[in-house]
Image 1 (spheres, rainbow, N blue to C red):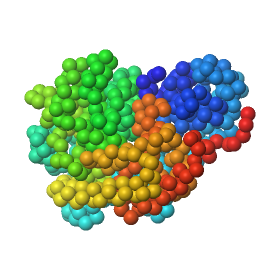
Image 2: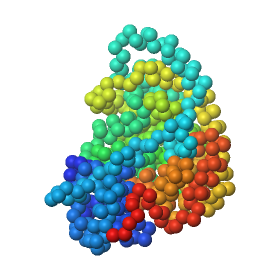
Image 3: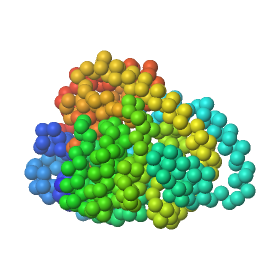
Image 4: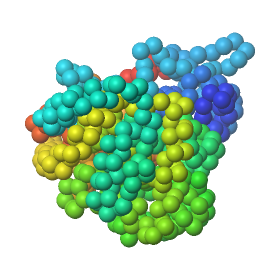
Length: 489
């Protein structure tokens, strides 16, 4: 199987083996025509397969999948019928999206007036009073900055200093020149991948992992080597073996309240992984956006602080204010050596000359209030985690999960591989929820899981659990797919 590989328009044509490696197999293990059409559609929607690619010839795909050619013909007919493919005489069958359909990674994002309960976004509301105060301070400061052109490729000096000071206070001495302010943590990660990775490079990533990070690797044509994160956390031996056997260019880790499992990596384990990465010349990209969401344990020190003297040279840390304050602010950062920050900034200005001065002034004001904001956020998340768990236990007692020590989500075990289809069915019952397969490196993994955030008001979860139970009630082992027409080839 191609290791988490995504195929893009540069390839133009998918071989049978390429397509087979990107498809999620059905629970029974053998594709029927409807299961094959569904698998292609899901790969299109979650970004594993790009648009306007030619699908393999029917006979070739049938041989690779060990099914009849009639099965592939029926699947292609279903895809054309539902708008996920089109044919050109003499040119074959090409991937497409029907009118009005968008990839999973692009939404739909909820409208504040939407009656649908959104359990797909792990994103809290803004701290209203503190945000208003920060806006007022920023407005008072803005005239001083408005007299200049307004471009700060590295970020406002005041904000770089504030972020560096927070790292230092948490146990990792940091200078302002080691900070690059970005438009959110996602831009920070994208910059690092672009700077240090090339198409075809191997990247080690946890399985499951943050879906937008995986998409950022796939869109660059990188080959992802998965290492599992289980209920018991990380297996250092497996990670060390993967590093030594594949010598990946980069390794992407979420050690603090891992998204989506909520696990916390012990710092001794982090120290071992840093040593192993240093031995293979692998750059460690550490996502610390959830560090401030410590619910049942002390807030962890920065990962790079555990690496020891000289051990942090190949560690790049990524953070933001999205989880501790508000995602709508779009302020993130990279913490690395001053040399790496300069290299990343050169890459940054080719696409984004500078971040918003106003947003950064607001961020400076919020950083002054961050400790009380985080304390209030943590207390709020504890209450909401308890409310979600109680509602699920009441309405869906067969579901299982481990209560995480931090983070913003429960990683639910459904007991059967129906998550993707349950998510589609739940939407018709008024709940948006994300199936576990969206967080998997390899197709077909985590279909028995749901990620459910506890970032909404407590009173919402009773209704949400009722709707999920209604969506699940009487459902077969594999749900019917409403996006494909019901007919028999």
